[in-house]
Image (cartoon, rainbow, N blue to C red; front, side):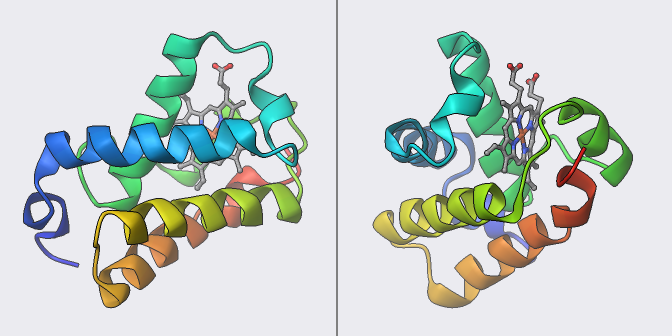
Amino acid sequence: MGNFYDKYGGEATIAKVVDYFYDLVLADETVNQFFANTDMEKQRKHQTKFISFALGGPNQYTGQSMAKVHEGMNLQPNHFDAIVTHLRAALSHFGVAEEDISEALAKVESLRNDVLYK
Ligand code: HEM
């Protein structure tokens, strides 16, 4: 993945991908209930950190911290899969190359077991 974050324009691109991803997530009844009591600013922050993580930018997480922030949500595989689907769609929409999308998704997958069932 190397310079993925910079390759696609760093923060400016992240902001655009976030807007798109954000709309997809909040329109999806599989997952939008998790954000029902989250204010919009926090939601946006979550999506930005998430995308930034996937693209290898700043804000990197450990499994330990991810388990902690998702504690009490009891996230299931279908929730995780929905988020992954929206991430793929958002990256694809902005012309990210397929091989780079695969790397981003692999990065997100690496946290699956830390995030689920907490
Ligand atoms: C690898 C996968 C994920 C990563 C890296 C991730 C990242 C994060 C981070 C960094 C936070 C803290 C945000 C903040 O307070 O600024 C957070 C909180 C949260 N995440 Fe995730 N997340 C992942 C998967 C998911 C999934 C699958 C869902 C639900 C479908 C989800 C829903 C939430 C919610 C509802 C919060 C709390 C927001 C709040 O009310 O403060 N996350 N996540």
